[in-house]
Image (tube, rainbow, N blue to C red; front, side, top):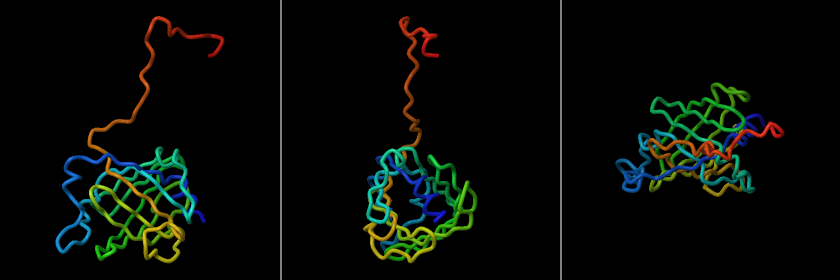
Length: 173
């Protein structure tokens, strides 16, 4: 349950597809998933948790960074979780996560399946060590679609209003 809570609260990704991503289908030799294509920072686009739509605000506030050394970082409203992962590039590719550091659920594992197509990742996994999903439907598992964050893309922050009319209001402060 801790893993469900941890990943459920944090899970919200959405990517920006670059021109290079559009050319790359994420498959290496033999049509298998290319692990190097997963490396980078991803944003959640959509999610389903056991048949129910994931909170869009939570998804927007989260990101997922995959490192080439077999580690990943999932960040969002619930905090930052460090993970290690193992990838089997079979078809469908299998991925196994374990939380190595975070506010809760350290040591929890989640088996899943993953695919990469035209710059979008689709990930289905069983929280709390359940059975590995066999399809990408989110009915009895968690299902997230992510896209790669564009290099150099910064958070959208509202610029400060520096107009003469924008003076501090002591009644509101």
